[in-house]
Image (tube, rainbow, N blue to C red; front, side, top):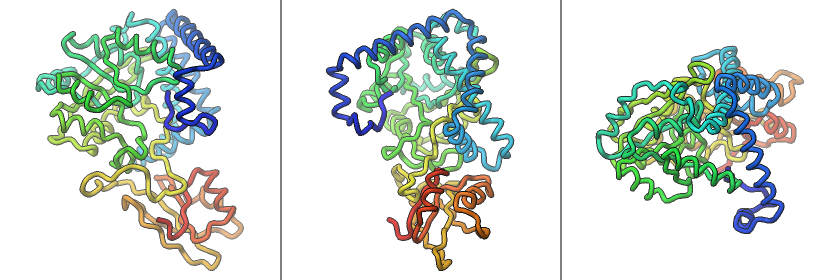
Length: 413
């Protein structure tokens, strides 16, 4: 997918030129990737989905052991999401199952694409379908909130088949780096009856689609960075997309949630969830999204660093404050105050939003910075987020970098 950041060797303007006038080497790379993808699809298309799911689970279990950095991201996400609900052993077991399900859902998505809808009816069970029909009957369109969850290809193929032809369904996607694969995906979605909006398309076109009675699904669980809005998700403030709430308010569309959970190898349950928000805000959307994700946390793709800490400015996370007061966060961020050589504790910079709980802890004689920070981190359900220091030295900087902690100096803005 198109990345929000490009490497120094490929600045945005150079990358755009390569897409318009690709070199021979890039064209060859695209063709090779397309052929490899097609071959993999054909291979998976000949295998029953339950077998593919079992193979994917094995691959996911292997990835859990090999991908240490990604495993730590998943474990941190689960630690924040389920702090106070699940103990360390339960979260570790959940992390292992997340990797297995992610492997199974990824391979099954490729296998489902290759099968082109064949046998899909036997793989999908629908629950609470009336919620969608009640939302559609209001006559102002539907905005559906989704998470990266379950066999997303089965979801993309099944939803248009579930609805009559007069009800148009759309999705928002990020274009692939490889335009040949991108064209293939778009052509397939159109054959399935899905309208596709690029993430760079004008939101006014999306609003017009919804006003015409369409159902627009929006993946809402990804980190939104600077363009996002701050709202609690699982009790912790995060930068999230404001688009579902904006579209629902401006069009009067009904807001619903959609989940997809595994009920057996190669079988999933598609569920609809009603929203009780009279005037949807981004906070209301996140409450609905959390309900969707809680249907089956094992099926959620937790691989992205959802509550990522900005190491340079950890006290000021990316994202815009909502109008009025930022909703209170039940799970406050943890900041450790690091004393200077004279033992004086620094004054923590003002945090925006004000959801930080500064703390101190005694350091044992001879305990190095990394061991000390690891011990402080493990002393509570929620992870340690950043350190405030009056004069951070090289040892502290190395320890924070290794542990993925933010570090901010006293007096920072």
